[in-house]
Image (cartoon, rainbow, N blue to C red; front, side, top):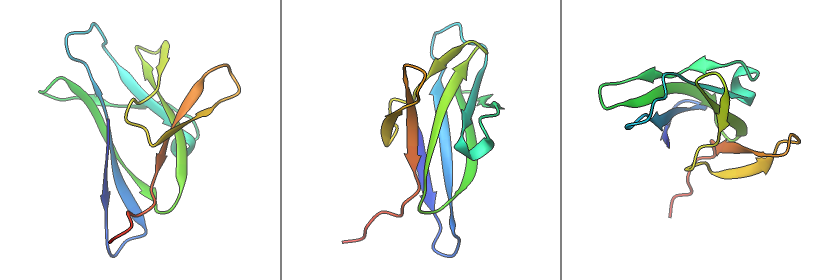
Length: 103
């Protein structure tokens, strides 16, 4: 799951990435993407059994990413803004940091 917080006075967006543990046997979740040079950044497990991390990303861009579960299984975010082929036979998730258009 992805949530975004836009700031009126900053050129960045606070993006919260979450992966629910639920009743699964998952012990670790990391996120890798354009924004961290595809280096695994661990998510922390909270009391609600959700792995989570927050990142500040530049506004008006699109970033590819994937989750790494238990250091072995790659997964996409089911709430991603879109998906793009990654050249390895699967897709990457995309998060976009474009400000919403006000009516």
